[in-house]
Image (cartoon, rainbow, N blue to C red; front, top):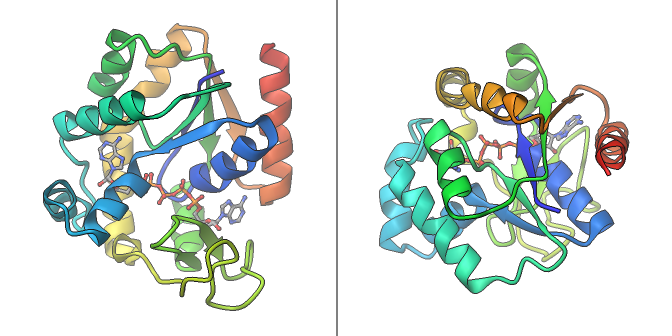
Length: 212
Ligand code: AP5
């Protein structure tokens, strides 16, 4: 089963992708995490992407297409994959179709811009393994330290309030049209993303069970 997690920045795509991948034994393809790892390793693809990411803009489609191709060539999708943060444009959605990636379900997390802006102030991220926490809603066991790998948690460069607002504007202009694309294909399920992490996971699992 291949599932797309869709939603504005900070809607909880990464958090829910992690929960669902464990529950359903699926792999996760997160273009954001791959780009941040490439930046940390100072690879050209990452340093080029950083110029867009720091401004809250999308990385060009051809770069993302390269990342997805590389991932598919080097990973066995096993029981399936959760696509977190991709596709983000109609061109990327069409590219997945052309590459023969079958999409079974698209889960769209719905949340207002105001709620996102409030949420992002509390996000803490592990730059080593990509895990995401929230100081109140989803805290690590030890403050400031990643539960999974022990790395110090940091605040993402693009979580500054003005960059978050820009990312929301880009989401509405360039990513939201994907909702129509997958609604027409009968694959989209909208889920309220404002409940707790646990409640949202339950709703997503129920939505997927109804599709079986
Ligand atoms: P990416 O890393 O994908 O960022 P994003 O889509 O902006 O999403 P986020 O990671 O910010 O949020 P999320 O929805 O995963 O929420 P999270 O679970 O962390 O991309 C970053 C950049 O890379 C882009 O801006 C772009 O430049 C580039 N890029 C990546 N992919 C691209 C592509 N395909 N095409 C072009 N460019 C691309 O949760 C957020 C916070 O809320 C956390 O603190 C979390 O703990 C907390 N939280 C989660 N759920 C809840 C809940 N239910 N209640 C309360 N708090 C919650």
